[in-house]
Every structure is written in C-alpha cells, then in structure tokens.
Amino acid sequence: MRLTQRIVVVGGGVLGTMHAVMARRRGYEVVHLEREGEARGASVRNFGLVWVSGRRAGAELGLALRARELWEELGGAVPGLGFRAAGSLTVATDDVELRVLKEAAGLPDADRRGFELLDPRGVREVNPALRGELAGGLLCRRDAIVEPRHALPALRGYLAGQGYEWLPGREVTEIAPNAVRDHTGAWHQCDLVILCPGAAFTGVAGQYQRYLARDGVRRVRLQMMQTAPLAERLTTAVADGDSLRYYPAYDLPGRSALPPQPRVAERIRAQLLLVQRADGALTIGDTHEYAEPFAFDVDEDAYDHLRARAEALLGTPVPRVQRRWAGVYSEVVPENPQIAGHVLYHRSEVEPGVVLVTGPGGRGMTCAPAIADETFR
Ligand SMILES: Cc1cc2nc3c(=O)[nH]c(=O)nc-3n(C[C@H](O)[C@H](O)[C@H](O)COP(=O)(O)OP(=O)(O)OC[C@H]3O[C@@H](n4cnc5c(N)ncnc54)[C@H](O)[C@@H]3O)c2cc1C
Image (cartoon, rainbow, N blue to C red):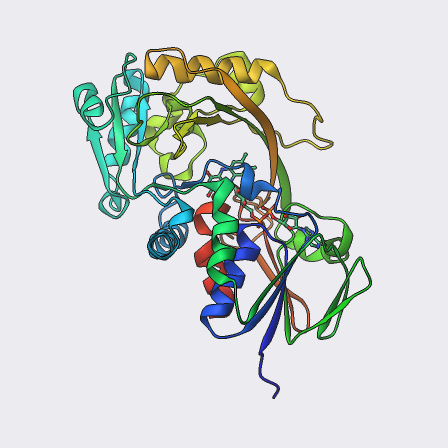
C-alpha cells in the first residue's frame, strides 16, 4: 500500500486552512490552493465566534468543545488569531425569554458549557457595557472569539516554511487520480486531495453534487455590519433573545412561549449577535436567507432592526457603521428527515483519494479545527 505523504488542500477558507494545519501536524507535505488572491468566503465574513453555548447536546456539543480546545491551543502558538476566552452573554429582555435561559441553565450539560444564570445586576457586573433594560442573562464561559480577518493569514504564517506551500490565485479545475490541475494548466501531484470549496457548488465541486445532495447540503446567506471602534470594551460576546429561536440547545419547553418576532425580524430571520473586534469595532449581525437566487444587494431594513436591537441592549447609540457585507455558507440541512441521524457537516470520499469536506453551516468557524482533525483520524 502506498503511504500518504503529500496532500493537496483546495480552498483557503477556515476548513481548508485547518486541514493544512492538521496535515502538517502529522508530518504530511501540504500544497494549498485558493482561487482568490486571499480567502474571501464565509471564513473572513463571520463573527469569529467560537460558539459552544447554543450547540445541541451530544455529538454537536462534543465537537464544539473539542474545537474550542484546539482553538485555544492554537491561539497560544499563533497570537495573530486573536483568540480570547471572552465568554458570551445571551440576554433576556422579558420574562418569556428569561424562562428559556433558566431552563438552559438547568440542562444536564450546563456545566460543560460553563452556563450561569445572572440577574440584571450580575449581567452588568460581567459586562458593564450592557446598560439597556434587561431581565437577566445567561453567561457561557466556554464561548470564545477569534479575529476572522486575521486568522487565516496568521495560520499560514505559522505553517510557512518547509513542507507547506500556499498558492493563491489558483482555481482548481480538474481532479485526476493523485493530482489536481489549476486554471493555469499546472498539475499538482499528491497522494490525497482534500477539497474544501465552501459554498462553491459549481466548478470542480459541481461534479460531486450527488454527494452533497445525500446530506441535503444547502446554502444560506447572511447580512452583517461593522461599526467604527466603540471607546468602551465589551468584555463578552453578546446575543439577544431572538438567538434562542435558532440554536438547538434552546429547544426547551419555554421556547414555544416566545411570541412571534416583529414583522421585519421574522422576514429576515434575524437574531442579534454582537462581537467587539480587537480594535474596538463592533461586528453586528445577522439575518438568514435560504431561497436562491439570493439577493445581490443588502437590505437596509435588516440593518435598522439589528442596530436598534444592539442599541437597546447597550443603552446607547452604536458608533457609525463603516462596513456592510453579506456572506454565504453551506450547511447540511438540520434535522433532514431523509437523513438517518443528525449530520453535523459533510465529508465524503468522492473519488479514491479525494475527500470533500463542507457544510458545517453556522458552526463552521467554531468547529473547523475539530472537523479537520477528524478527517485525519
Ligand atoms: C456572515 C457569517 C457569519 C458567520 N459567523 C460564524 C461564527 O461566528 N462562528 C462560526 O462558527 N461560524 C460562523 N459562520 C460559518 C462559518 O463562517 C463557515 O461555516 C465557514 O467559514 C466555512 O468555511 P469553509 O472553509 O468551508 O468555506 P469558505 O470560507 O467559503 O472557503 C472556501 C474557499 O474555497 C475557495 N474555493 C472554492 N472552489 C475552489 C476551487 N475550485 N479552487 C480553489 N479554491 C476554491 C473559495 O474561494 C473560498 O476561499 C458564519 C458564516 C457567515 C457567512
């Protein structure tokens, strides 16, 4: 049997990059191709939340916790990741939301998540910037933050040197046994190909649609914004009560008592997530669009809603918005009745020696190191 020595990783997002990291840890040579000059997909457009709090009990929580350990370990070796064990506060503004938080704090795995229910005073002791009207909050000590705009170049800097070659601006157009060809016509020989194309379901990944269809992989588009720096530090990441509607950990009896969201929020499927960047800016999102073709423009109603929610929790206007963007991720359809068991992401050997990994959805930044590690186990 031929031993794997040289791996080609296709895709410079967090999944591809973490596969490069885990392959190098095992001593493989890595050639890493990315079609853009720098990763421009979901991995640089996200909040940088290493989010344990909302994960489904069982395998999903286990994967997120394992990934968080790996992020922390990498954070120690690669300061450019900006890893911060900041924790998060999910904030209730009324008794109905508070009931869900109380139920979550009583979950059998609440300790593993580092959950603690806080009254409004307790919330402000942990995060004094939250001066709005609150009914309480759920502290999650295990949640963490990395800097998505810096993390990938930082990881590549860590890998740089013997055994790792980064080739940006190369779109892989053909896959043959033990080699891939990029759009310049150059062939890259290898023993194993790891294909991490993110939400690019056409091009070279298009020929493997039937594998993606098996796990019902779909695409989701989100809107985001970032403000100018806020003078004050936010000590934790922050989520509002609408996030209780979306994360599986909060599928608890009290959730059914949540009233419908305001019309705009329901239309755009909004939840507020708020993360302060290392430079003080606030990343604010998000929305969820499932029907393709996606809008090519951004919707200002969504931003009005999210800004108002953020200002209500902070009790003060947010600084001027400096950046707006949308991002698309791929996800295995949650709880697809066609699929036995709950699949957390898609991995398949689409040809001998060619492994396709995608579809982690809104948990991809969190789980990428553990997913990559699993690929090599
Ligand atoms: C707005 C937003 C917010 C999010 N927030 C969070 C969060 O806070 N926490 C969390 O855990 N997750 C979050 N997610 C999800 C997470 O960002 C994604 O699951 C994750 O980034 C997916 O990584 P990826 O490497 O698979 O995809 P991508 O980042 O899209 O990378 C795929 C790369 O492959 C390249 N590529 C594709 N085809 C080829 C080819 N043929 N040849 C060469 N290169 C190719 C693309 O150019 C791209 O750079 C968020 C997602 C979005 C969109």
